[in-house]
Length: 165
Ligand SMILES: Cc1cc2nc3c(=O)[nH]c(=O)nc-3n(C[C@H](O)[C@H](O)[C@H](O)COP(=O)(O)O)c2cc1C
Image: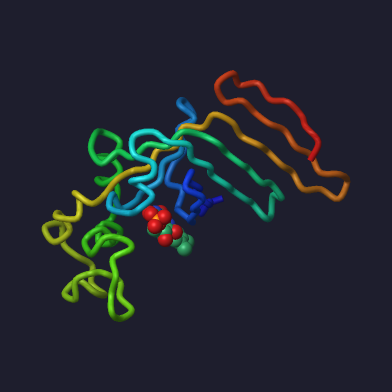
């Protein structure tokens, strides 16, 4: 479940790397470019769906929650600090969705294929953001030859109930 699909209310969806789950607040953390279209859609609070599937465990999780983008603050700062310079490099180039006349990574030529230094990646910090999705409901689905099983869990009350698959 490392690369879930993150869906927004504008009927768009994209794969993102799940970085962390905070059990205390039921919040998923993703890293992203603050200039990407999804950040404008989510802003500081919007409905977000997260779809996860573990093929081996045969479990699907359909999560609904509220997303928010944080460019500054302790969570974004800590996430940036914990990132490698190689990961930080992604935020150095043109913003996602920028038009180009030829296939392009959007990164400046001088950085292509290189492990950048701390000074070189410092300007990328202003483009970095975390997407935090606080879960309200999780729809758990277990695929089984003996009969599938499905439950809906309300994350606020902690109460789950079985429903038919
Ligand atoms: C395997 C995989 C992992 C990805 N991980 C991320 C990620 O962690 N964060 C991110 O912003 N985009 C990630 N992307 C790119 C997004 O799917 C998407 O193309 C990009 O964020 C632009 O999305 P937007 O136009 O909806 O804002 C990943 C793509 C793939 C294929």
